[in-house]
Amino acid sequence: MKYMEAEICGKAYLVLEVDDHTGDAGMVTRIEAFVDTLGAAAKEPQGVPRPLNLVIKRRRRSIDPWNPDPDLMKRLENRVLYFPYVSLAFCAIVQAALEAIGLEARVLPKPDDESEYLGRQVTSSRECHPFIVTCGDFIKMTRQPGFDPDHAAVLMQNYDGACRFSQYGIGHANLLRSLGLSQVPVIAPLTSTRFDEFSGLFGLRFTKLLWQGWMAAEVLERLRLHTRPYEKEPGETDRVFEAGIRDIARAVARLNGRLGFWGIATSFRP
Image 1: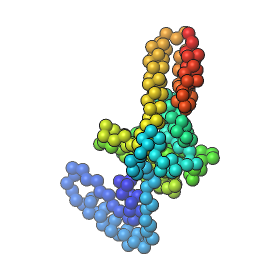
Image 2: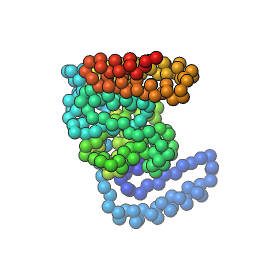
Image 3: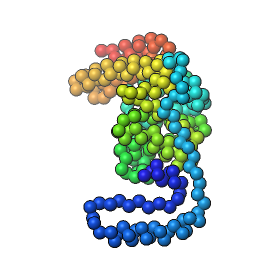
Image 4: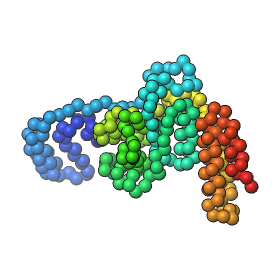
């Protein structure tokens, strides 16, 4: 419904939802009321919706699969790539891997009640809850001090299956368009068992860094969960875990990753 609303670009429309009620009087009344409004609505000037600023695939196969797609890098030149907060281990590694390939990335703050409130203003409340919350996060992003839509971009993971997650990139691009920020590209590479546009757009070196960083973070996560029930100082395990994740992120952002490794060793001293 939100897509239809965007594409008809302000023209009058009627949506009837029918349940198992068999009486037609209510439907007839609403149709007649809608017809009565068409005379005034027809006089209003109508526009044409701008195309979505959305990137889900590379334009052509790259001869250098290890490095990012040149068209994508040109599109993101002088732009900050924003993406929603998921967890420290997830976001710190993604940000570091993006910086390792020459992009400036920034993690949005953790979602809160304001995120949901703002998200519900621009959704129908029938979408997935995470979609509603991320819409609110992106609205908050546009209100951050120093935010410049001409030098900003959005990263959103994507999926090509039947899950509503496959609509996130399109929905967020539509949201930015409705906010008058069509100049902000949404980078939403398809990722599934059939497609790997994440590697196609950002390069295999980027995805290798992600894999290495996330595997290291998984090791720390297991140590954290095994240790925390027995900690003598409440919160100390989480503090050491956070320091370790940041060490891993610093290693991912480096070409060789070695200096960050020794940081991990010292952070997890007995």
